[in-house]
Length: 334
Image (tube, rainbow, N blue to C red; front, side, top):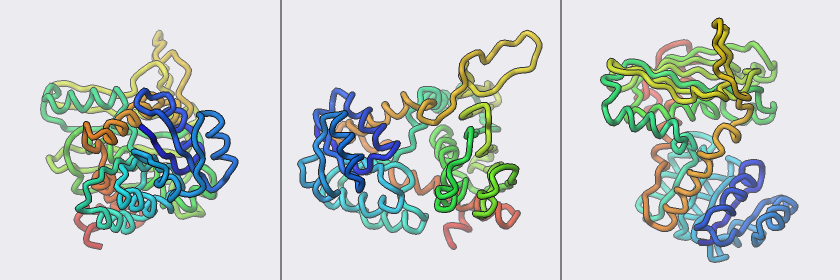
């Protein structure tokens, strides 16, 4: 198949490399506002260069991967759907939840699949955790813990435009909690602090946060996030049931060290970057998109899925700012 790529920054170039190595992909058509980025990708992967998104869609592509800036996501998703071309778009759907809802309305009723990029759904550990929960082998769940700790904060310009840590970072935890447990969040309580980069506080955001989510069956999910985790990129999940408990990310490259006498675990080089931690997941995610394009599977992460995680982020942001519990029903009504 022939796949178009819109946006060739860090993640777009990474996707181009991944797609070029998939058996199902015969050729790429790439486009980026910066001509040098498109030229570089064309030279590396033998891709055709198009000078606009419209030119990509006119080039006979079977599917399109959107890795452009967030503000461009709504327009590009809608353009692909209107052209009848399946589209994969990195999260978020849009800069704000309201804009995301408008995108959903714009594509409603059209038989063109849209896949949103939440790569943890394709990580082997999280896939195994979901299977364990769904099989019932853990018994009734009582506690879920989900962690995303970055080794260093993003640039000030990113923080100022990201909408906050819950919307750009924690949203991955929110999505994977829903996906693994199969439950919905009904209420949140969030807290945060600032112990590091001054520009994060100046942007009205926190650099370290904790949130307690109440799921619709009474399970409690505890989410921990930080922009400052000097040992590395730490992504984990614990799932505790009445019968058994399991963990995702408990492996030798976990960026954590034990101070227990005689304990050498973990012994590997810590993960230091999200693309390092999830290389295999990204490949599996894009392989899944080729199956979506081929019509052999439905979208594994729909716009509706992405917006559900977004609503949780909205509730946590409000809870952080107002120091109180917030229900999901409240933010949906706002």
